[in-house]
Image 1 (spheres, rainbow, N blue to C red):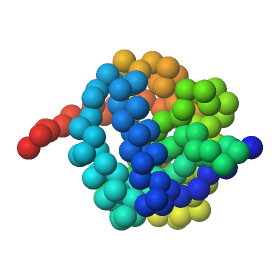
Image 2: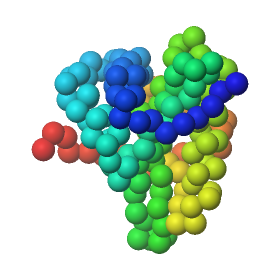
Image 3: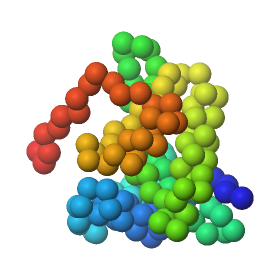
Image 4: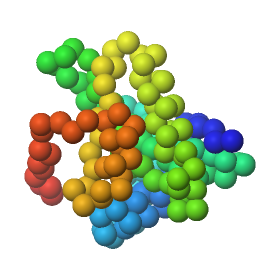
Length: 150
């Protein structure tokens, strides 16, 4: 059975490792391990930055999902952004992501100020796109742009 829990500072190594693997596998990016570790550590220490959720099966962490928040003045509520999603290869197609998403959706629905859940996905990651669409996400009319680094 898959269970979900909040990640704690003691989970730093597994969360950083999963984030590193996710960047490699989905976008072909090699992240700076020291910068990544510091970023994960800051996120784990401050729920205003982000909240990590870990999926476990038989005591082993098999997947993760993070949530950040964005205030919408247009809609007078919070959007929760799903990010840093990773499921161990051997645990894929076994409901890990679905369990994590259901957990986050339930938390969002029980928080009256949350009005929606959003995520972004790499243009070339068609497998993830299909999963997200099957689970009820819809493509928006927005194009994500950035200025990075500043």
